[in-house]
Length: 226
Image (cartoon, rainbow, N blue to C red; front, side, top):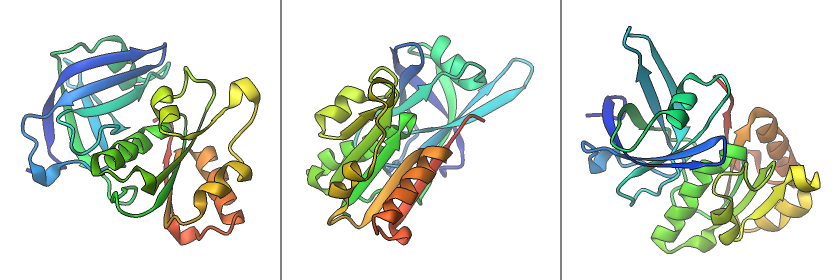
């Protein structure tokens, strides 16, 4: 079995946060150590209608590799075929098709000093990295900076705050992550991970380059509505 195979996952826990976010914890009975996910990877979720119509979307993993269940964070979009179903309908005990883990570029090895910058739901893979650091006993190797409209809109807000992340809430203060936020986090790191919308990723990568961070050490994961 490879990570490109579709598998049936059992939904074990559903946690809805506010009006737009749902955390799904999935059991993959067929998962083997050879396909254990790494922080920064994602899964594709596929839904199939009775008439055979299918829709699939990719969602980042927030759980660490050592956790028994795979945790996905899904933002409900107003016109989202998949996200709407996962937020509105799915209950514990349901079965859904998944494929993964997928991705190799935006993956942290847990040993390289890194800075991780996320905007909105782009913080999800960063949470996986932070949990992996805890798992390895090396939280000092990962520095976090995140941005969201408000605490309610930012996934894992309390967890990120508790981990000492630099947090900018734009709706409350109008302040965005800037040079004074990021420059102190860069010293001594060998790689920077940036995840968020195309606009966020572009602005943050340009900011790092302006701070003389090597462009070759910046890894970007962009997302947007399908």
